[in-house]
Length: 312
Image 1: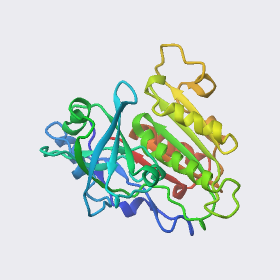
Image 2: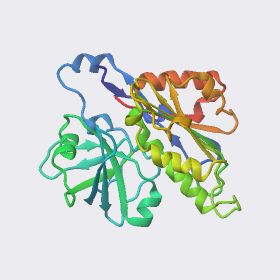
Image 3: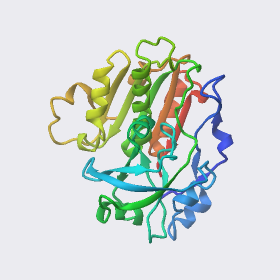
Image 4: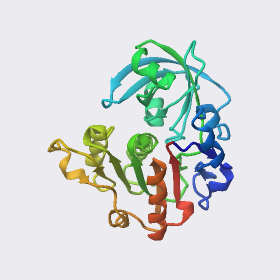
């Protein structure tokens, strides 16, 4: 199994002129021959993998106030957080540093809620896939309502436009649990539209948002009901396509209009790429990201409009 080495963040930093108050950055991970030789003995843990990423200085206490099964393998945690806790939509929501009392290992888990939920209710939500890694195993087997933990946010992968920033059309491409930061961005875009429903200048002028989301089967498509509800609420602004690669059971009738069998194709992407207005966020397994980047480049989208995170 390949283990990532982290290249300089600046090597993959990109700037859209005048947009988003500064840099939109994404982390570049690459297979490293040295660490690949080491991988049979020890894999890098979360803090090592993300050592070069931005993270907040302060660690905040949090209390688990809700636990639900998002799928057979993913639990969603709702956490009441400290009043000073903040994050940006999609902010490398591949992780918050997650500290469990009495456990040496630090988890890196996904924020799947929007900043708006934090502002309205003082809570955030994490989506955690089951593994034998101690923090994830603890969440799936020992965590209960009222468990106390601590968290720290980090990362350079986010969508946080200012009201004066230029309008963009978002293309969100997710594979598997890579949906988490992109779901946060989708929810944030919907919140921005609710705040400025007629684009009348009171807030950010939101463009369109299209989500392409691939998983093995429909059961593993996380958050699908809420995604569909957002698309129905704003049919002129939001749209989605789900892709399943190993479905055997029948597909629910409600999902059928959104469902496609097989992998995401170049033809589908072509309908949602405008080199002048599209800003694309990608999150998923490295082979998928590498393929999607090359496809988007071939469709005329410039590299500074393709932002990505890879799962390893």
